[in-house]
Amino acid sequence: MPSRILGLLIPAGATADARRLVLARGLRGLVDGAVSVLLASYLRDLGFSPSEIGVLITGTLLGSAALTLGVGLFGQRINPRRILLVACGLMLATGLGFAGVTSFWPLLLIAIAGTLNPSAGDVSVFLPTEQALLTRTVTPSSRTALFARYNLAGIFCGACGALLSGLPIVIAKTQDLDLLDAQRSGFVLYALAAILIAFLYRGLSPELDVDKTQVSGPLSKSRGIVLRLAALFSIDAFGGGFVVQSLLALWLFERYSLSVETAGAIFFAAGLLSAFSQLVSAWLAARIGLIRTMVYTHLPSNLFLVLAAFMPTAPLAVAFLLARMALSQMDVPARQSYVMAMVPPEERVAAASVTNVPRSLASALAPAVGGYLLSLSSFGWPLLLAGVIKALYDLLLMLQFRNQRPEEEERFTTSQTTAR
Image (cartoon, rainbow, N blue to C red):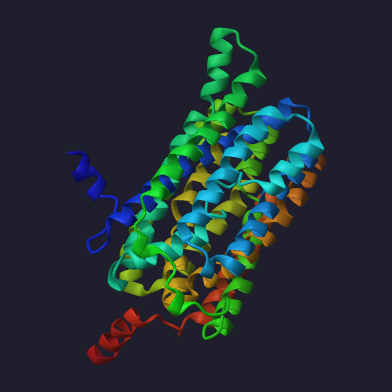
């Protein structure tokens, strides 16, 4: 029975290494989801203002960008398992640092140097290496399906983590414990999860190690298309930075006075919708192509985000947020698969890093601005800005890349032409 359940994690044609990477993504998503909701409440209880919380969130994203840049510059020549194990060490130190430090400036340094992920999504130092390794564990025809399962594991477990984020507070209230100490336990669990994830990485096959004969410069053949994609992804990420999960939770706290437990339940429901949309994404991409999947699902989600900003009551706002989350992450496996498909194998780590670093940098700018706006007014300005900016990205992506298809989609185009 366990082997049958684990078999559902990967599509046909993928290896056992793919299963390990998907499991690691799920475990990381679980603790990311918990701390992304808990973070805003914990920092508020420490006495920080919305502006200061926004700056700390910006620090975490800047740190992710710097670490991801390092992977892009040196990852082609380093054992990928070593990169992932070092990242686990940073994750362990980050969790312990947030649990033990309460002053603003030391916390900011830990945020910048660490791995904390306030989005519970796809902004992480682990991603470039994992994405490149995933591509080596599966056939091209199953690549998008594997990326869908990889993201499904992360988002579903992130939703479960969000639901569990309120548990420390519930325990503190029922057992008459110190509230801050209870919330710190979430960051301790984050640190302990790093140890479990490291064991998964240690079991990866030596066959996934870098082939020295294929090492090239960071980018060569694919430089042009990767830089164009990186520029567009940066626009999307800048908009997304206004609605990272920690900042969205802060908006719900400030605007509607929701509790952490309620916010966690909302993000759990949103995560479930988002998780299972990943499988629909793979199905849709196989029929209309990767670029159209990205755009046709993303545009409506941004409209729902804009509408949520104007809702006068929490139930209406939550309804639009849930509608948005049912669609907003369907572009992720398609985007990841598209980048990996459009570059040669020896440049995939560099391509993943070059497209993720600008995303991290761009998204890092927005939370500080969003936190400042929330300190002035509880209106959903961050949501409004996010929806408009991300819609602009969708239109530009469709305009520039609608006719640039990966090799496996060429037969789809050819069959359409023949049918006519």
